[in-house]
Length: 463
Image (tube, rainbow, N blue to C red; front, side, top):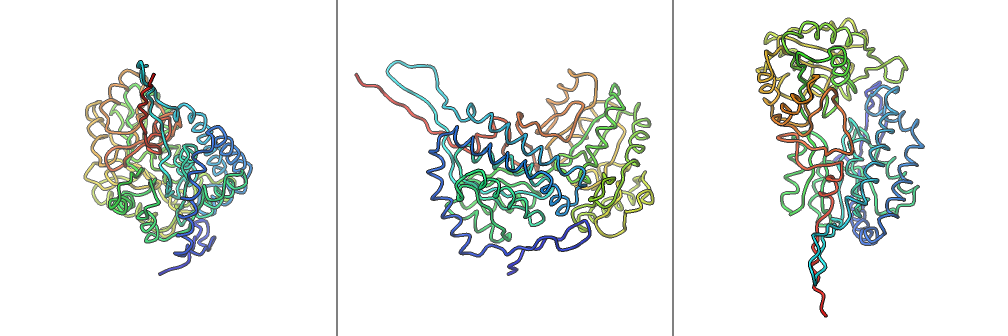
């Protein structure tokens, strides 16, 4: 069995991080220590837990520039954009901590003479968080902070592409004064993760990643009566209606499709445009895409970096080639992007028209800098095409008619409906998906429900 974790940077292909994988003894000790620490942490007053977690966020935020450097080297995002993930982490964390007192408060039914009745939310115990590489902090925060605030202890296992992110978070927690065993991290193989999920000391698993990865987590948890939270990506659609503000829609949809090189669970991967606006929309879209600068993400002028690895770029290349073979028309010349290569992670953005749902490009997740655009005759056709997917994470509508958007949104098979925006998580709203986009919910006060169990107190008062 491989006993080393090696992270190769998409920037230049160099070995950037190497770590020893956890030994069986280390896994056993980590789980044992976490379980031992949990009762004390859960009985720590909530306001003190929140103070310590606020201090953790402050410490993390103070490392903003060095964290951004590491992030660009590990997963290839342009250095000019990486600091914003630190900002986003801090904002989400503080929002969830602000929500904690009300979200974790006792639920009390109407008064009944002679009785005290309430429902208390208790911590589950040990939460295992399996975090991805594409937004390694923004995805991890959704589970880590509310789990800890609720009185759970957390074990974090990050993607092998972003191992330093796990180390950074734990360092900030310990610097803030959290007891060491309350928040820990391990570098593990897939087999070791399955062994951890099977351990009776683990009470909940939070996973963000691929559909196949989610199935593997669910299988590992199936032998035990523990819940899982699975955020598994999407093939998120957008619909530009005839009355849309075209300049606004174009600018935001280009960013929604190509930010982070399209490597976003809720990135826009397919666009439907009313036929009366199709030609103008596509022309404006192409103009903005051609303004991107693909190159070394460490250079200030770069706003489109490499994909995380060559194999990910190859998947996109295969989807595009197959779509073209089926009649799709690519509108971007790769020569417009000198840094683009036929092999390797540096991939030019691509836009295709004359696409349809017989093409894998319009059905299966691309997770890269490519989008297909189709003309539609009306709302009904757009709605049918948007729902024609095994995924259902987000969908965006671009129109001046809010009532029409709400009506369409009620019929969309998705976790979040956007109007005149896309590719964004509001931490005060529930983050959830339907179909193969996963199960469970994070963020908002609802996000605390899966990280706690209700215990009812029915107390009769005697004279």
